[in-house]
Image 1 (cartoon, rainbow, N blue to C red):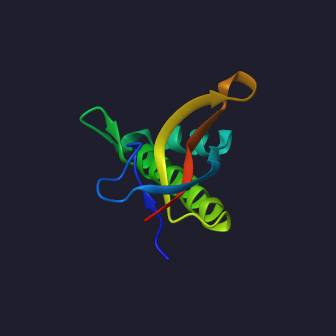
Image 2 (image 1 turned 135 degrees about the vertical axis):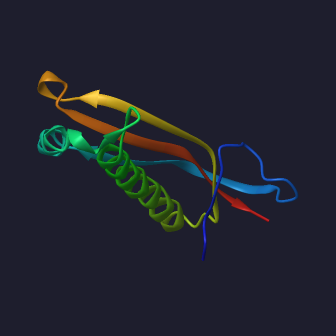
Length: 108
């Protein structure tokens, strides 16, 4: 069963039958990743780093997968009101956390 994930609070034509609770997925990029990325600074082209973008995309994917798994475990077929946050955490701000949260729901 595919889980519909959206930043909106409603899905047009699909009324919410039940609200099942908040679900959260998180992924943390450790300090070693950042050191490795700094070592590959030559990847930066036009002010962008392909290596950073690839790691952030991977972290987002992990966080979204966790949200889907947790929603599915609650019996949901959708997650609405998705919020995506990035936070610098850890000693000396050596890690980046990607957090995805939303409300698991059963829609018609």
